[in-house]
Image: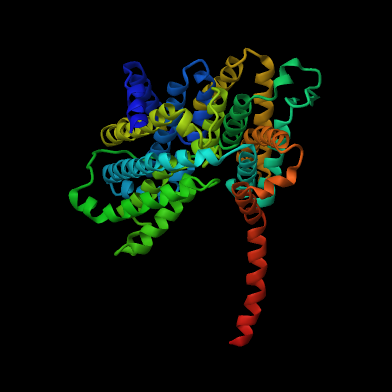
Length: 499
């Protein structure tokens, strides 16, 4: 309880509250612009938070995350183009409602569902913190090594590509993490004579490149794509009857989204799809889905926004990103010298709960913004991409240079952007690369500490129950799908023969 109150007090700064409000507006703008998403917005803003104190810096990044995830529904409903991938299923029912002149009902339902989903996930996050704090005392370097290895095993499913391509991309990220001086042996690796690389490749330039600049290159190839736009002549918000019809779907999807968000390697996009499908499964009128069902909007939006809070559980408590955007936030934590893990809730409890309160506040803020500012924010969809993306590129270059005032970081960002574009073009996801870069350094450090602790007897890690548990999970994550696929393949002919 003391940590809960101290976190609230740390957040009760007028300047910080004003920054959070401004970041909420910025996040809504980012999410509402087609092509931009929460991950891109957080990556672009990350270098500008380096000089700030840790609590305001991470609070702003998380504010962008939550607000942009909600705002993706604006373009999904108005122009049938989801601002973020997490709002893809919102198009199915939101746009048909907008075509019927009921955009207000759709936007209002999205705002209410998003707020309830976000609040539910944050309450669960606060409740889980004490449990994680008690578990912190059982973690030592071997356990952290096993946990990080488990996080790397999740790379197979965290991207949009095939599992093999995701692992290849993640391995490339781990390779990038080896650049620089090894802290245990003081040997320089892959620096190629550049003194700036002695401390390794920075997270920020790579994040800006693979998420921001690569997206610019992708969008440059779609300049001729025309999007259908509609106008909102009047705003009519959802009625009480609408809320009575959708409250079960909202609560159900809030629970689904929180659970999906907690799982490492999952995220808001997966949660929204499952939430939408379950809303249709349990609906009394499933035939309305795809034609303008408010339950469909409620199921999708409650799930994807509750996943944002759930994704912060493995990010803060285990150091394993629960979503692509959480991976960028994890980089922000490490840049500010904050080591995520179970000990965060014992050693930095004020910081952790201040972040929870910030997430709760931003959910309440975009509730009112979504209800009363939808008509205004819909105007941002009219921004021509020929203006939008040059501005994004400028911010990318400035952000990459601002961190260390180094032109090498600018070239790293541009190079990462080109690599990210080529990866996307040939079916590789850039998310495993980014996470591999983050977890690769942690894995090497924890392995070195474990070897020192165990006097070079690495096999003793398998005698530690918690470390062994994570090793087993890693093996199941890597080989479980293959084993189960073969088992079911062998059973299928037997069953058909028996019939």
